[in-house]
Image 1: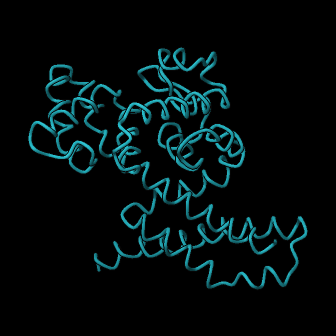
Image 2: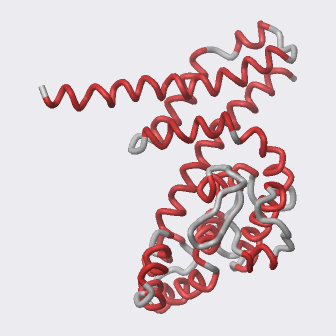
Length: 258
């Protein structure tokens, strides 16, 4: 009896999530219909296509269905207002705009007025120092924050040697965005000293905790914040993958128009 009681909410939640995912996909289809996409084109984009995208997203979030529900709601209610700013900010970057949007979701849930207990604020949660460095005058201005955060991420990316595989450079740059680049550089040196490959994030991340312990063990609050860097990178990966799937679905629909 207890087993059944515990299973029911999860089953119901799964049904709700399926509806949420499909609702966000169908919303875009409805928009295209409003602007004049003909019914035969919509018909060619079958229920099967929707199911594929839905299942792909669900599999990514299988350990955090509540988080997925919140993410989908934010993607529908908040992201459209800032999507053009993300696209504009990434024009000269090495990454797609969805990665910048993923960073912003991790930092603020796309809330331009977000503020942390340490004083970082805005869409990209910039410190005063970073905002000044990036030429940002008002951190709570969404466009300025997005541009500043995107450029700061690219700056970290540019600091890393070009021989590092691109994905590994991206993950290291993300960790640097959260921790400060000096910690990533120290972790790469420690990896090399221990016979590892400093160009692979999977190996550098193993030595990052040691760097953080050595630098921050006596600063309890700061250390606890910094030690979460590995989870930080993994969460952004998750948001990026999800946004990429949703964006791919839109692009497939748009391709059907032309």
